[in-house]
Length: 361
Image 1 (cartoon, rainbow, N blue to C red):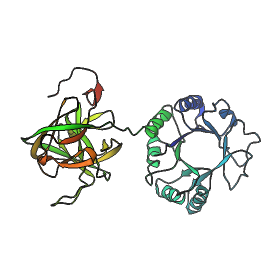
Image 2: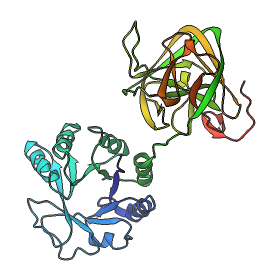
Image 3: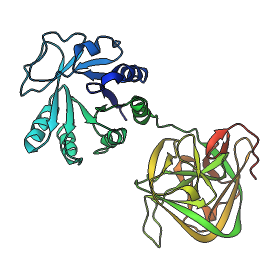
Image 4: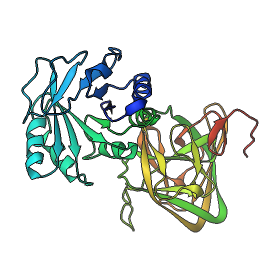
């Protein structure tokens, strides 16, 4: 995915302007927007200095501005790099915005109403155009929502009512890398029927790929890759959003660093979906379905000889992934079979990695 642009609007910031600018520069924001050229003068060349003049008349001197945002209905094109700012408030202004984003250049868009439909229309109108679209948002949560509209969102977002700390939070949310995990191959040493207990199905709000699932394990130091229910079954339809993950005390990854117990997951949480190639993405949990079922313990060893264990529902349709994204029915596993997994490398305390003595057996 192309990196998203982060802009900061300091026009209404008052006495906090300087602090907000320092934070945005430190967080490597792409642009800072002001209505007074004097506010742009102290900014370093590492950030694009954007002037958005107030009123109907452009100033005679743009100062250090690298880009000037104009209202094309009012302003003539200035003798500097310019972009357009459109407030979408009705069908007519929406049409003007759609025309603007089809042109090469920078278009900043503000949407009046609390619906994403106008934004969807504009993004669709801009498909395959060479321009850059920046949408405005007053809050971090709104900015993050913007970036997923029509899957890909605009090219960037601009915070219009920032407070200290917002630039840091937006940078962390927008630029958090999607980690790629170095998966290992575990060798099965045996499977055991271990009685009855509660197992958890993790139902996500996402279509999972055939080579994708979540990492689950009885011990935080070694997790196996449980595949999603995207593969056909003879007696029931597929559930491409679901992973029949394991016993409720099992660990899974909420992100590349932190673990959660399956029993702790609730609607709205996130888990890390992991592909057979180690690629990852955070997906939202829609539901965790816990039911009493017969259980099966899978014992294995990691490449360095470390013991690995996973307890799952004792049923043929519960599956794990092997090398090459091979789909393996857990009840048919035998000694010598290979399963993909991950060794987090550190012990855990309330989900956080920690260096201390911890024995799991």
